[in-house]
Picture 1 (tube, rainbow, N blue to C red):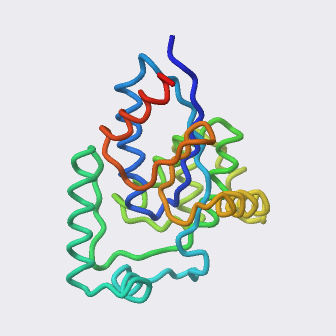
Picture 2 (cartoon, rainbow, N blue to C red):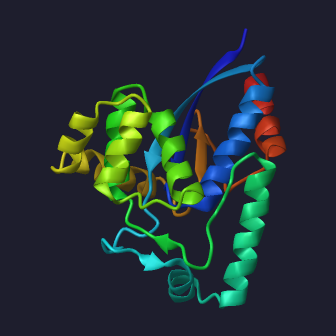
Length: 214
């Protein structure tokens, strides 16, 4: 009988390595369905909590934050596109793409968890941002995505127009930071085992089988 395991997936919807890590984890879970039965909860992390409402060009942002030259940024994006494509995900990010504030997306994800739709909304947000080049801070975009995955669009709009779940998201962010999470994705299994980064399915599979056998 498959062994139940708890997975906390700490991530941001504007983090390209997070969707790569998620795809790798999901593939590994499919391969190990004979030994583990996983419950994934997506936990909030903001890469750019101070980002303004209009966002920032991705190249400018990476240069300011990491000191990367345009050639380095382009090479990194190409690597990310290839890794994502290998996992069946289309990454359309280019030199004209923008980085946005994601706090409201995390508030909606908190609500979606309560409604049993968190995983579906998380995947929709990744696709909207990385594949469709949509703004995950735009309330109209968020409401449309909520409706797409079966959530009540009227309630979604009400949440976004207020500060509902802001406290809960801030508290969760602080909790994971207090546990030493400073970069994402961070995949925490059974509150004990940490796997960091956009790892390939093989690494996740090996870890899952070891945990199941312990």
